[in-house]
Image 1 (tube, rainbow, N blue to C red):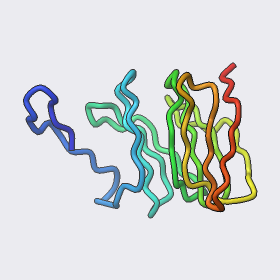
Image 2: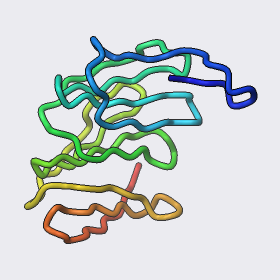
Image 3: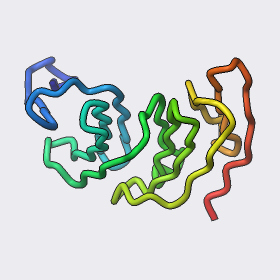
Image 4: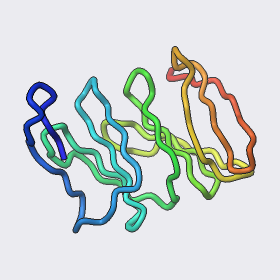
Length: 133
């Protein structure tokens, strides 16, 4: 559900598909995007803040964590089946992926978005340099 911050008034609800539970959500304030992952049908959805469906992408991985880059151009997902995947945010097009040795449980960026922290299900923490050029 989307509410007005000024008055708290209800504005609209976004339901991606037949009331299937939403597993993961990220907000992109710069462009007013809402990214959702539905585990049941293995799909990523990109909505505008007005509730318009912009893109949908079927994925083969069970996404555990999602993060949007600081420049808000990329979506990075981490899956329980050990796949770290990079998407172009505006189209949900897959750019690249990296298969790790263990499932991914969490993702975070350093304060200036230069480093990507990847928490693994075995307790390890990977730190990688995130280059957008």
